[in-house]
Image (cartoon, rainbow, N blue to C red; front, side):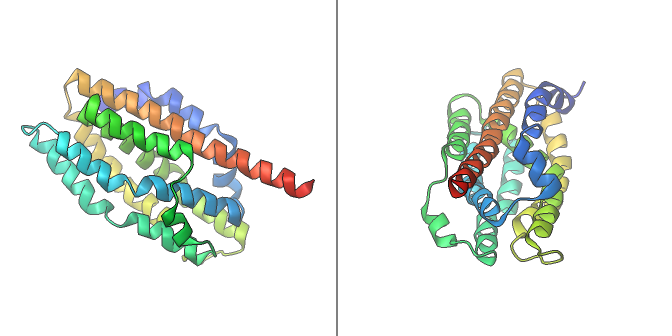
Length: 228
């Protein structure tokens, strides 16, 4: 079994738990309202703005002799520049306050997810970064395009691209990244590095899922307050 196949197999339970979260299913099938979509983009911004710093962090801790991993990190860095600005533009296009989002910090699940990866790269293994890549790019391939279409329809914006750049662009881009990712991880033979990737992927699935679950709970709480 290749390491990529082992990685998928050993993280399948965490992946299944993520895709069983009610709001994830609802968003992909029926979309969400404007407030919840803005809330999602807000949390997305607060982890995506750390993507390039995290890649640079992994590069700084990467073994100098592993030129293959170093080159991959540099390629990721080149492609991920500025994606957080896509999110802010989307927020502005649908009537949100992008500058308020920029000044904020995000809710605890997004902050915990980012903090864990910074920690894991520095103190567990520099290859841990690839666990986060697996989760975020793998889930976006499966739900980004469908989610964008569902939200458009829910908001009565069918056919409009403004406000959905991050989701639609990431879904297509990450399909290419997964092919690249598979080749990269299949070249990693060190058991400690493999274990760090698997464990980080499980942790990120859990925190990424909690981010969505909390968005759902917060939306339900707001709805109950308005109905009272």
